[in-house]
Length: 95
Ligand SMILES: [Zn+2]
Image (spheres, protein in one colour):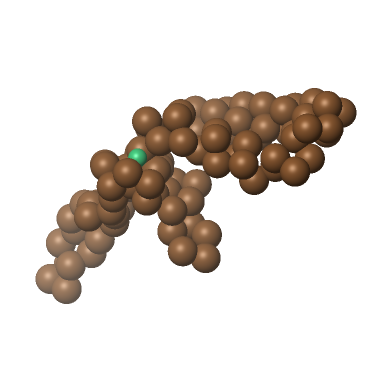
């Protein structure tokens, strides 16, 4: 997971350095807006804050819906999702 903008120092052939935004032209993979984060899977996925809050949770629900109606499984998935979210927040705060 990469929070955007993602800037790195690049050394020019003349020895000077400049800061470059590696994903300056990237768009949110869902809505086409300005992304706030990137997941570097097989193909990079860019996501904006709005889609992260409003679309991705629904996508996750769809991905687990077959077991979702089983209440015991629902409790396990909810705990796993909450733990993953909190681990992500903790990691992002310490980067
Ligand atoms: Zn978006």
